[in-house]
Image (tube, rainbow, N blue to C red; front, side, top):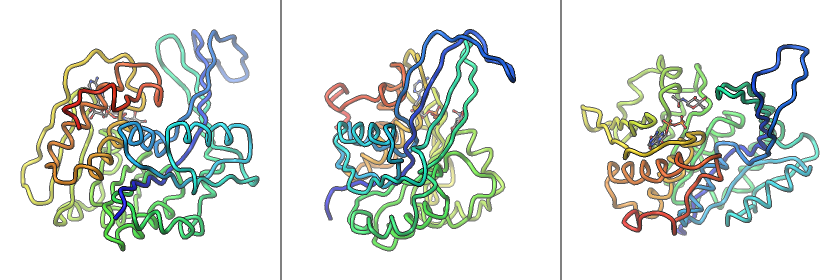
Length: 298
Ligand SMILES: Nc1ncnc2c1ncn2[C@@H]1O[C@H](COP(=O)(O)OP(=O)(O)O)[C@@H](O)[C@H]1O
Ligand SMILES: *[C@@H]1O[C@H](CO)[C@@H](O)[C@H](O)[C@H]1NC(C)=O
């Protein structure tokens, strides 16, 4: 098998305006800063994996518009294969419009756009890269049925599946548990997801990871009765946006390239990578490169 890791994902252009307060309905206010960044959980995760040195390919869809063109350039600059990044004229590139006030409170509007047009045909075209990957990572920012199909294709070829149920759905199809080897979510998502038959979590070899911000993670393994806490190091956090994606991207890297490490060790190392990302501003802009990390992580 080739050391390819494939992340199937959403790509979004995030446009952020900073203001002193949030506008009321019908109101126009003046802000003091505007910037555009690259987001989407799948793409963020893929960028973090690539920066650690993973060979990655992203399967996603953007619009045939300037945001989409810029997105493809951004992926290429990060060394990610864009062979299966489709561009469509039927919808615009996904966007997140974010307004943040001086207290750090925000309002966000997400328009998924082209992300929702990624379909089974696109997966079929990419089946070679899916089936020859070491690890396949999926999230829920595209049509859930398409994410599930990607997990099934991977599983059918014996590829390890890492699923990040974000954003969380209260009525998540239980098949997502069946087809993911590792199920990794944060506390909010874990809360929304409770109600899913816990019996499914007890399947042999299944591993659930709940990220806990500054506290690191909990790992709940099918073959160990007691959940294990894996703490993160103490750092000065300046911006935790996208920390979860940095963690998932790092974990995918370790699963693909260091498969003999214990799960606990992989989680400890992934905590380390994610805790570096919270010490810089922004999302993708805060993700560390291999050369900037302690070399004992590799
Ligand atoms: N303040 C922090 N200090 C150190 N590590 C952190 C901090 N916040 C997040 N992390 C790291 O990022 C991971 C994901 O953070 P979390 O806040 O749970 O995810 P999300 O971004 O989904 O909200 C944590 O498991 C930890 O490794
Ligand atoms: C968990 O992730 C979601 C996005 O899926 C985010 O809205 C939420 O704030 C995160 N929760 C925590 C506790 O970090």
